[in-house]
Length: 334
Image (cartoon, rainbow, N blue to C red; front, side, top):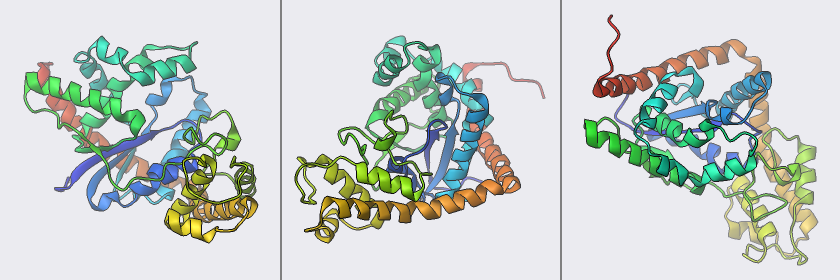
């Protein structure tokens, strides 16, 4: 049974390896949200299909992402953690909503232009209609809030436009979702190019710390992180590399930037980078240990997947039935 909490919806794609940026910027902050909200966290595997995947690898990666959600502290009994592809209502509502979405709106989506430039040999219709599936994801669960970053602002705007258009014709079917601006996660930039966000698709592996990197790899990447010719550990716009490392250290230790600066006052960059590496390791080691433990609990994870998929399907199909009825689609005789 749904309680009277507001509904919050988000998810991550089942592609690439999650980075420290994904964890400190989003996943870590999701953990306590279930106290205040009814949370749905999707493994967004349908979205991943706009890029060609190696099936066996993709299947494994998607399951591993769900296990990682749980290892990071998302309680599968208090949150609904499910596979997008296991709830057919996502694809079904996406088609229905595409009939209420205009080509001009999709043409304006900057993410389509960016992705089309990256995958020029595979500019498929799914890449173009991606925002409609994203709208279906959110609207199916009557979400009140969606945590978003700058790059997803447009997606939420088009979701709201589609929902309002549908509601203006058929009455209050969909809740109009609002952006969620809670405690902002740390903004972690690339270790090699601090003008760019740390990304799981970065071609330079030294730019990102991945959640499953071992301690030696983390130390090596931190040592190679770009800084500057100065030697002062100070948070400043003209010191993007050092500022990024301070941001990482503060997020991992819970200390303020000012406290971190004070701690490394008079310390050389070599020791500073080592301190950052140790802080990262202390955060990732317990997560990695729990992840490895859960991977071995196949039956337990299977039971959680089944339970959460059923819960997600229940709420999604409730909305879908309402939409189909409003549209005048013929009901299947019982």
